[in-house]
Image (cartoon, rainbow, N blue to C red):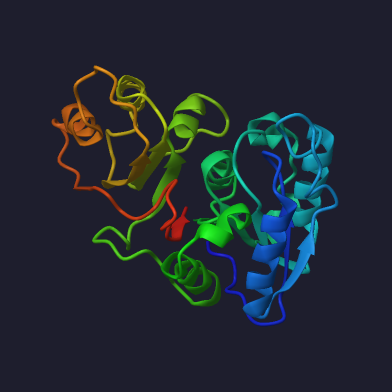
Length: 272
């Protein structure tokens, strides 16, 4: 199920459920969203600081819960990734969200929220650029975000676009294995991206997904940007790692789609 498309005049909110943010960058992003005709609100603690986090757990939880519950809000923009959502995910109540679905927008640490929503509600979410980086996001990526929000049935064009896509950041998908936020990949396409990981650790996590049965009934694999991969002396590229782990399966694999921790990070609908 997809939330309704946005239209001019709709209210949206920017919240910070993970890492602390640069206020000036968020204000620049708000002007971009307003230029699209949206009315932008901010979470009470959107600019809070608590060590590396954007406020204490209870503050970030409160902002996210209010955003999920408020029927006037049509989209929730997570300001940035970093870390923090796993600390609050199990305290969220999605009953109001299920009655009035809205777009949840973000990536990286927001993979926790994407996966939990797909597992427990079946509502689609949007893996897309976040406000903390709009100032460096090229027009082509921002246009894809706008199209995803304002048009019906948008999906990043690939040969697997008509399938249901789940996934996100590899390290977070891996960290959620066996938890109540773990995703079901049976009959779906799995999307993965990553940043700054050692090649051997990518190998470990891909093997972990395989051992957990995530490839057994997969419809396909979308491989986004693995930016800043540290080759060290492991000796295998990301593509070689994936091919080695999936050689006995016959699902299609598409590499190098423009999604991930890069400036040109296109919008990708997940969960539907």
